[in-house]
Image 1: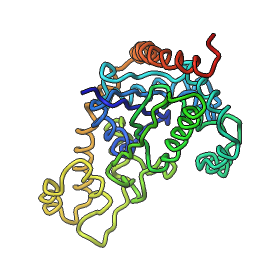
Image 2 (image 1 turned 135 degrees about the vertical axis):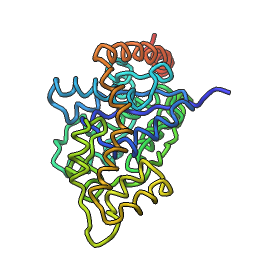
Image 3 (image 1 turned 90 degrees about the horizontal axis):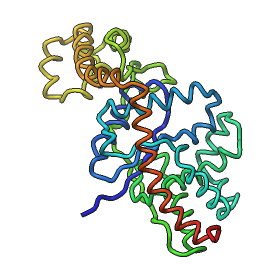
Length: 313
């Protein structure tokens, strides 16, 4: 029985923290082998906000290293760069010629970003149709997204429906897969771990960086157990494993932080070493191979699309 086809976009977000790992990377790494998986580095989407070529170039290299380091095998998934497959933008234009401006104006992401002061460019406005093209070009049946991105899949389904009505059955309507992480990963201050809150523990950090972050965890002196320390510790070990440790060191917050440092470093160390061994040349080779495999599939689909819309004569 053939596997369902899956596509997800890899966001270039800079330095990752353990909240990113447990909330997104690990859930994906755990399931990608069950599908015919496509991992797209969304570099064209990044142009809506990134205006520094050097930063974007480094982000592309980094995000591929991140995913490979946490266990994604490039031989078992197609890892490619969006801009290496020109059919993405060609198909996006065709969808833009089918949907209306009022339809695009309903996009939550566009409203949210412009409300935060991001410039209302045409690229940002048309973003949902490029994302629809990303998905539909490969007949992706499953698209892992966060709950806040559900509307993007609805837009892709609408683009598929409009094209199918106009030109005949062509595209598969995708279904979203809402990845279930571990809920909200707490930061060093007890809030959700986020770079914007400056409360993170770096995913590929050195032991010294881990130690500095853990020692900054806010503790409540009113109890025997430092709850913020314990909440992060439960990401690494079960409650049954932690019970003797926290009972033995009841009220000894420094000892418990030291234990957390040891466990985080032991957990991160193999991934950190793997990532350090991945060179920029390795990433370029992965992307070149992925581009070839992705273009083969995209080209086949676009041959059919061009024939149906009439530009192929």
